[in-house]
Image (cartoon, rainbow, N blue to C red; front, top):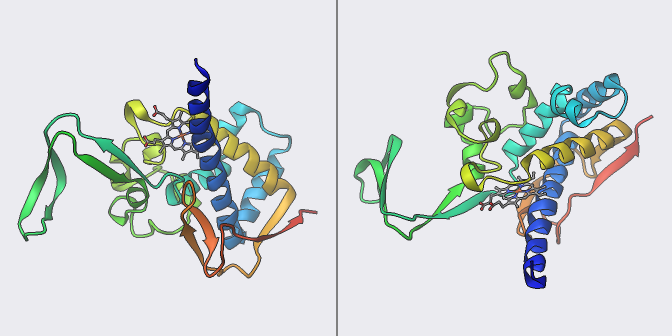
Length: 233
Ligand code: HEM
């Protein structure tokens, strides 16, 4: 590879490989601070497990850690939308008819070759039509129900019925690495430290524009969500 090609790859890897996982971890610490009961239950699972888990154990032996991580990936996808360009003229059938701007009902959408399509990962992951009436709530337990993910969510293609890593030939290349890294870092942090919102659990958080959208406390400048951290004794 030429020097320019190496540099171009570094930009992709810094954005794709660092910003995404870092933002997801930030959201995890925020939600655990807002939900101390979930934080305690996660710590209990990690302490009961004992030694630092191996790669395989991180994947399969810590169900509550898995549930917390996937609930964060569902509710706060680091990449909130993606864009695709139609390579041919096409007609896309809709699962349910929609009303157009002119008031006509239609059960399909015509797409001209060359059109750019923006698909919202965040809206799909948070849709109550897909995930049920509590879709916008942080509820790791939804990943632990006996019949697994229920309802229309099962029809969503993608890792664990989430659009978070997109799907198909351009799916995220680093998803297994990202999930394992997310679990490894979160487990070390939660095992050793207790996290609280600096101004209490009801602190309002909004999304600020950075390289990727990042959380910030409403009314504060810059990007960041200050937390109180103390060692778990
Ligand atoms: C929670 C963490 C991550 C999330 C949510 C995430 C999400 C995504 C998404 C949505 C895309 C598709 C973007 C698009 O097509 O417009 C993507 C692509 C990609 N991701 Fe990730 N990613 C994460 C972590 C990582 C990590 C850790 C790496 C590498 C170590 C990585 C490498 C890549 C690469 C190389 C692509 C481009 C794939 C292609 O276009 O063929 N990602 N990622």
